[in-house]
Structure formats: structure tokens, C-alpha cells
Length: 72
Image 1 (cartoon, rainbow, N blue to C red):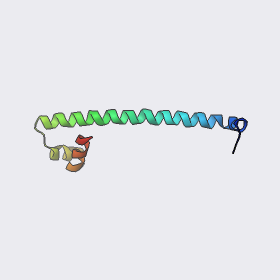
Image 2 (image 1 turned 135 degrees about the horizontal axis):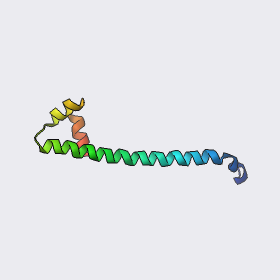
Image 3 (image 1 turned 90 degrees about the horizontal axis):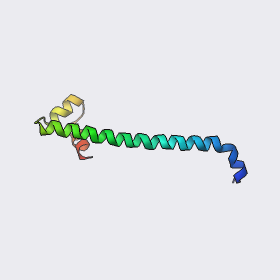
């Protein structure tokens, strides 16, 4: 096991790990926001009378995929 003095030489790597982790957290938050926006847009279409099957066909996914997207 390395002592604290030895770990100092790895500081750039530790800093890079922290930066990448922050970026991953940021992207995960963006993905959640986009998923919510997608769900709201699809729900709006459904409220206007567009079927889940029609939405699925237009998006190139299955109706079951639409159901899962709406459930999230």
C-alpha cells in the first residue's frame, strides 16, 4: 500500500477521475431531464388523441417501448 507521499504523484489521475465523475453526474441529470421532456411530449400527443401505436411507429420503436417511456 502506498503512503500519502507516494500518492501525491498520482494527483493528476485522481483529479481526472473527479472531473470525469462530475461529468457523468451532469450527463445523468441531463438524461433525466430529457426523459421527462420526452414523456411530457408523448403524453401531450396521447391527450390529443394520438395512439401509442402511432407514436411508436413514428419513432421506430415498439408500443411496449412507448409504455415504458411513459411509465418513467
